[in-house]
Image (cartoon, rainbow, N blue to C red; front, side):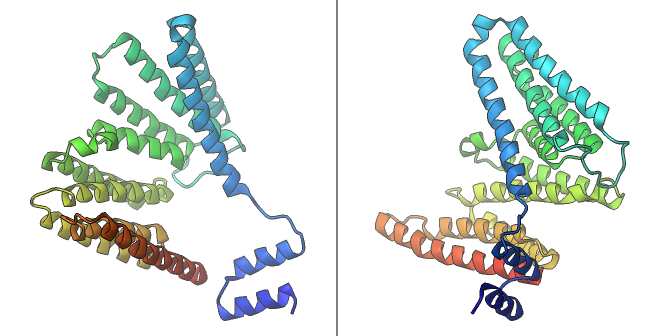
Length: 314
């Protein structure tokens, strides 16, 4: 039996989709296939790594280089990126706009990260606002939102929403020390605001393809807030109910809209929350390890099966 015959059988039985059949059949003929998504992710990671290295260099050698030279380099890099994007960008449209060149989105992302690095350096060195990071975060969020809608980039939208979350006082690194109701209320308010703004812009036809990013960010922040309540030593039962309700809503949305990420959110966050309750007070490390091994494998298998089902239906 040839490979093509086997692929035909798999397609007819529903094991693989028509798109997967075409791809695998092409591979059997040694035809080229696209690596655009993988290369795209690697390039964004490379830009982030470059900014991390630049930040380390600035923090390590700033005294030798001097503030003027450091700020001149960062300002020139940011201005160059901004000039490139402005000079190459097509006319603004409320609909989705393709990038005018292959490097356009990467230059925009690089400029946004350089802006953040320069603001951090200025405040650490000169303390112009006496450590009032909220103002920096608000200005940065506004600038990134402008970049997002002018140049149509989801990655910059994620930076904008992250900066806005920081302005709300939400910081994952500080979460364990802020297990109070006020902190969770800010997180829930932020999630609600992000969903409302994203839905309103989608309803008006302003970059409606951004709504998925709004919803993903809001869902993750909301789940983190509810989980922090579940991990409380007292009054955690109500937060568990809220978490299960959110998981049910996420699952329904994912199944209805054919978006696997929300199905995964419901499964993973629900699993963490329920496990935290079931293992509360358990002193046996062996029992806890056995629980995570068996249930973790079951969860992984379930997600793989659901993902395959989504692939077949699409």
